[in-house]
Image 1: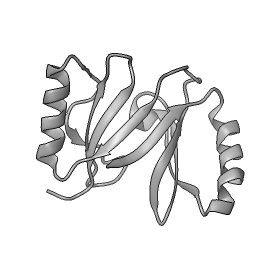
Image 2 (image 1 turned 180 degrees about the vertical axis):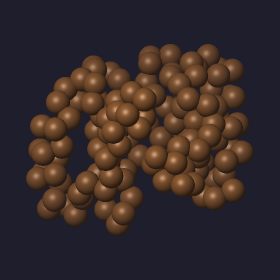
Image 3 (image 1 turned 45 degrees about the vertical axis):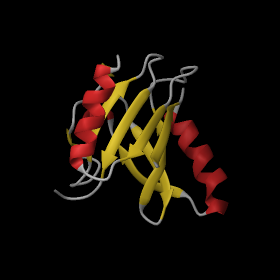
Image 4 (image 1 turned 45 degrees about the horizontal axis):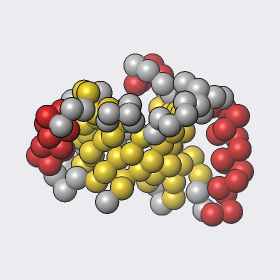
Length: 128
């Protein structure tokens, strides 16, 4: 059900170097990095295995209690439905349903902030 997990760190370069070493014995490595210019906000480094990043670090400083969780959706309609339901439940829009091609060509996601400010996402990786 969970697609990937991420959290902010105080020094992205230092944390990346640590996790590259610490996770190597587990078969995890850097799969992709996304710059702040590409996202319009923070820079991100995604770790994983077999070509899929599922553990992410973000620039912007360690913030106590702030996390990012992405839930796998079966299709794009479910992503859109998640976004609408979350807003109706009191969530704050943090990026409406749509393609995020800087991650990959079929990345269809939507983001909301929960009542505690956590970044919650639904994502579908399938083409239309």
